[in-house]
Length: 636
Image: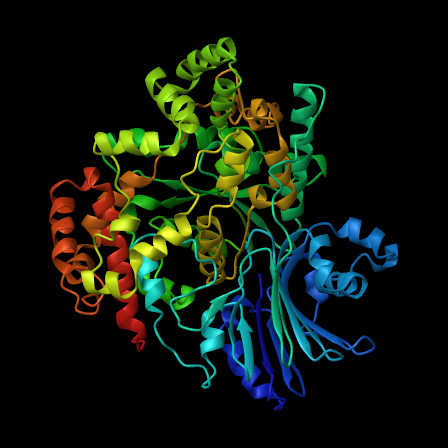
């Protein structure tokens, strides 16, 4: 994790290095190990360095290749280094080449198609003096951020929004469309931000800006038609294990101590144990740091859902670990919200970000720069319940009956729920289950109703039309388990979550890495037959099988995972009441939020904190937005 900025004056005016340095100063926290600024004519690039990989210790950026007429700045970790060395014809003596040099080598060989040959997490920009253009790219999953402003005269970009808005030429105006999207929990627009005319470069996308023309291109997408065909369950498990261990191994490449998030769940435990397994195989005897959330002060009725200590302890007993703990019940969701806003530059819709914020702080205090995170292994691997619909469509009643019975035994999910949610609903025409939900009073999409938004704001920005434009096709019945898995993997919320985590971890000079968001692992999991994801009544079957002998059996075969929501519901009202009291009277929200509606939600929440899930989420979002709007004072 580092920070990058850049400026290209498309009208040909020269770029002053002091201007680029000013942009870079706003994100200095991303790179405490040095900074560099480069400019030549109408272009300027900047970089602040955080040493994370061994190769980065001697890396100087921005890097210019005068012979080729190109200059690069990047925030990157390239994982397929061996493959690139062979393809690019590099010598063993060049093994210490930095990742930025590998990107330049790939750009020299393949041009803008170089991104198709890169595995890893990256955001970079290359100035091509010959073409007088800037080529920018983001990694396939969007782990690294890139924000930009583009006009006929100016192109400016940075790892964070504040680096772009630092320029006096760029107006700081509120994007009301983003306010509306935020209030209805709509994340499908992958380019907009809370700042008008400041855009996000979407994941898996390139942007080329020249003197006259600009173009964007999506260079990678998942193929839902590809299927991996092997001869046995054992071969599938071996293929998954090899890919998963490689994903973890790549993210262990570090010049500083690594810490692994350990919740006790299947995802984080698999990453932690895989990392220890790799360390042991390589003869590394020093302990692996872990960080876990604990809740010693919560009432017993909450702990039965949230207490994971026995699973955390099972991992710690299995290897050489140095555990660290965060007493999460001492934290409140809005405690550090103003400081978080200063780093995220926007209001955020993430009720558990306060927990990660504290884990990043602990990591930094312990001297760890790499934070392994098990974020959303559920989606990458898939629970596999879509396999049941495939069995229905294939008239495989005997196998279906057996799986439903075993799911009830192993996972504790009732037969009626399994049949309704995973067997019937996925294969029914959309209008039938919508009619069923309407008839039973269950159809309620707050994104369409916008119940907390004032009528004037809803009508002025055409909320219904906007929501429906993104939801077209999203309620259609998918016909195969793989198509449904593909749909989940393309969910827009993942990119949003990764962007927030990038900036939150950067606040503590920590780089978050996500083994389950490795492009190669995701492609493998999508291509697996549905039976490898659900088998013998066990969801996520392939991961459980592949981790045999690496993961403690208590976790390998645990049916469910902990639920962090009781701490959120309880602590929001106990610790953040003062902020909530101000929120429901906030005049800064009045143009957008129906204050009587949010006041009614507040009363319901206060009367039953643990049973008002939607109300508490809406209050959190409104409070978050109010605090941010008051602090930034943007013109509409």
